[in-house]
Image 1 (tube, helix red, strand yellow):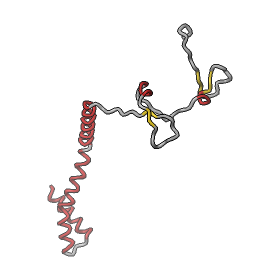
Image 2 (image 1 turned 120 degrees about the vertical axis):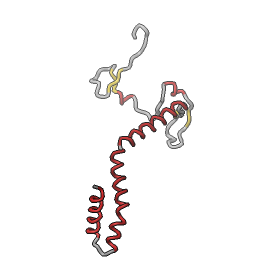
Image 3 (image 1 turned 180 degrees about the vertical axis):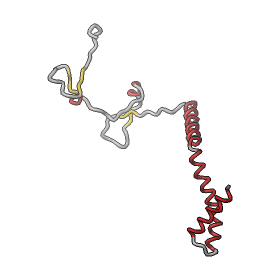
Image 4 (image 1 turned 90 degrees about the vertical axis):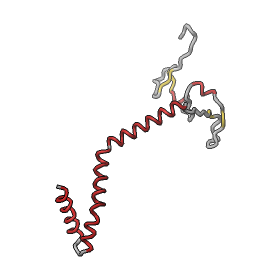
Length: 135
């Protein structure tokens, strides 16, 4: 670097211990709200942001995704969702079958309740009918 006549600046986050060439970073610089996708974006179109008039300049960049990348990301998302549904199928099937049984057996307990049987006894009789009929 000396032979090429290049400069190097050294900065420390903490106290540099009185070394003259080792600068305290936050005393000489600060973070800015700017964000750049690439180094060349710093020379992009300059505009004043409508929300913060205190900022002198702001680089606005919009990087649209290429169509092939969009299709690839959409396909990957669909594959991930399908794999999740396939993995959860066993649990979901148990819940759906239990709802199906409850809905199909409800008329039996409703009929027994209308004939004067108490609800708890009607449900127990319905469960017994399902267990005996299922064997």
